[in-house]
Length: 495
Ligand code: NAP
Ligand code: MG
Image (cartoon, rainbow, N blue to C red; front, top):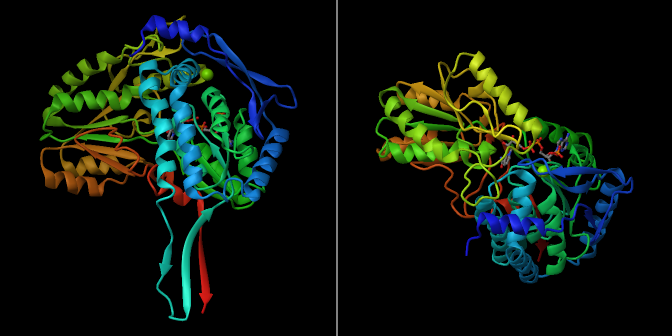
């Protein structure tokens, strides 16, 4: 039974929130005693004091991870046995789904309807999917000289650090720790200081499920913790999701230290192309609104550039305005809310400054443009700009908020050129009734995911997720994700 607004509010008062790091199988405060306040962006209330980890905690966690990995308590298990423990972990996440959804909503301002139906079940499903997959993928016997048996196998890489963002805190973390744990690694998660609570909570569930001490650890703190991990000489792999700017730093830290494997899932400025033969403009408009206003626009795949053909623009914009109305921001704990609060004051300020920039650059404000519920919390109205050119800052830079830039084109060639004229290449979409056009345009779009006549279609766990160009390298989700957390080994046996 879905819960009511009153029930969620009531449950929220009963939460007992853990804010300490989880190292070597137990919660503990930072040696320095330092903490930072974790705040609910919807009302400014403090939720917890969270441990501010530093060098001592990073070193201790890496030592525990290395020892646990080398001992074979996890990497040495049969894949079936590891899978069973991970399925228990997923089941425990589901048993605690209400609590986890509440933590996520209070911490990050995300609507409870979304955290309860997407983030938490999605994270549990990810862990379960890799748990089920891991005893079904094998190596190869390579063609070789008849006097040689040649094996090509994959083995766990060792100690993996996962540095993750705040927009889908537990889901993005699970996309890393799901496959990394399944492959037999020891994992250290560094959540964003803006949203550390669910990662801290699931560490205990991992232990309850039977994951050995040192194999799953969580180090809250500021960006420096990510830096310390990326520079550490005894970490084998860093899997990062976050901004392109920090991703570049991470690649540099790896180069400066031990050339640990680096996997980067970075930002985007994804184009959503509406061709004149779009089969259903109303549906395209609803999808376009969802593509930018879902999760307050704090989406790496946000369809933040709508490219619309001049002939259908007026009709499309009329539908789009109407579709945007469904996203007026409201209390994240109300299950009817479609748009919650912006994660914190810094991000709120950044989005508002982009709105000012759009106005000063000569874009026409079609709807929104203002903070909503000022004085109560950090909300922003769904905002749409009609842009005279595609080289404005609001058309090129990732805003990571509920701000859509509409760009007009006159033919398919121009649409593809504008779509690809970006440093990013995470996702793209095209709407057309012609199957040949669909394939031709999809092939030419330089992006890791292309949607045709839909947007943000998740496609289960089966589709690799990641970017071209400065949207990163490597892929989360699907069996390809296991490639990030394993080394390839050739073993040649002379008969
Ligand atoms: P961010 O500022 O790059 O931070 C990401 C993570 O890195 C956080 O845990 C952050 O910690 C940490 N960090 C900050 N400075 C660091 C440093 N110098 N060295 C190591 N780690 C450091 O990104 P964000 O604002 O959290 O997230 C938004 C970005 O993530 C957007 O660009 C979005 O597109 C991208 N994203 C991409 C995907 C994808 O799959 N491609 C998915 C979701 C989000 P603190 O927060 O504690 O400072
Ligand atoms: Mg918070």
